[in-house]
Length: 277
Ligand SMILES: Nc1ncnc2c1ncn2[C@@H]1O[C@H](COP(=O)(O)OP(=O)(O)OP(=O)(O)O)[C@@H](O)[C@H]1O
Ligand SMILES: [Mg+2]
Image 1: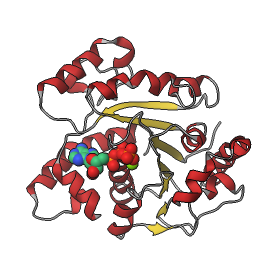
Image 2: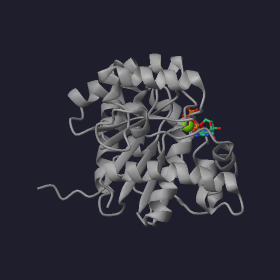
Image 3: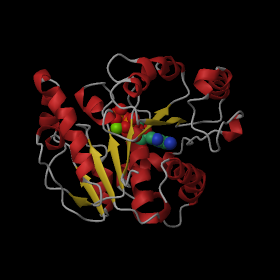
Image 4: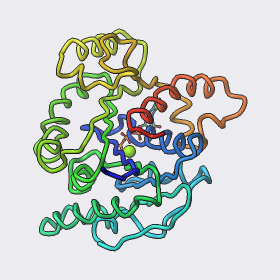
């Protein structure tokens, strides 16, 4: 019987700007601060979008190594603390793709790093870059769970086939070959607005059985729109992402309270699907 208790999750998308980083930030805060889990956040993106809000929040311990080392150094280690962030170094991360002869080793190193974190952390959250390069591949062959934020526009929906069947990091392909344990938590509509075209797009997704099965439900086997997980478009989310505040800690702000009331059930559901106790 497996004694593994560490759960790891990565956020992926076919397209930039769909909210991977905003959701990674809120989920990491939720797991660490509200659920009391030991959380390790890994930023594999070379943009600073994740590091800024987490470090500004004053809640995380910054690791002394950068995330490229988790791929290049077979002995990479991080400090043990309740809530740790491994930041990304732009040049070092971007250079990884240019070393194809080492890509197998990079993926192996990342995988064994995650294994070594067993017992030190309860949950690992990995935020990735939007382009399907070795960073995304190394994470996807190593990780337990994948969550894919989408936007309900045509471009995003056209990209869904690639999300599953894309040559290099299609979730279906990886699951069939390199990581048979990979579990897909689903597509999570983000930036959802009550406008007709978004509703039509969601209905279109629900109507295609292969897509419906891949939408994250608030309960198992969702059949109706009301059963689907979604995160609304709320200005306050962009604001806290920019200021480093924690959504449910924002005081005297009705919009923050209302947004959190809508988002918390989605965070609860993600934790439940990951088997976080
Ligand atoms: N639900 C939301 N409501 C309002 N703003 C949001 C929401 N989700 C994300 N945003 C904002 O939208 C912008 C893009 O989000 P984010 O940076 O999380 O996307 P991303 O998928 O990580 O992008 P990239 O591909 O560049 O890494 C950010 O300014 C973020 O604060
Ligand atoms: Mg991002």
